[in-house]
Length: 77
Image 1 (tube, rainbow, N blue to C red):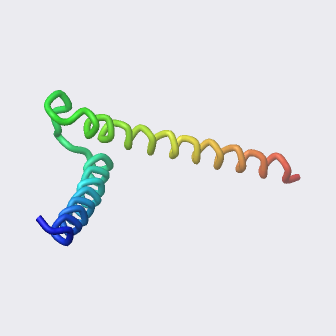
Image 2: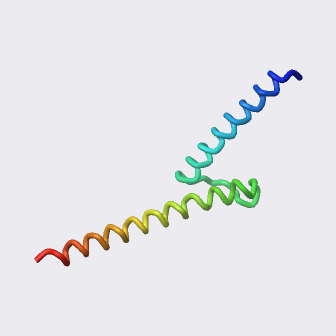
Image 3: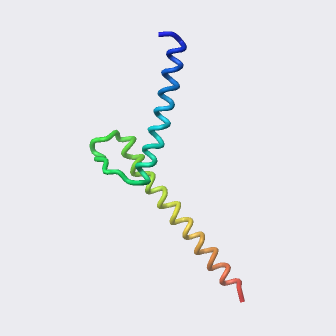
């Protein structure tokens, strides 16, 4: 195998890995019927962690919005 073939192989792996990441992210947000006992543990953790992180971000954003709204209403005469 020549050096050029080796470099092509590495770049193809990088593209596949990138596409795999975006597909997993889409599946995590959209939801999937994956059997978490039969898939790779890293993928299972990722599929479970993304919705949890999104929920925490949305809850925090809502709390900030409520706090700012109440602060503004308290300052108005």
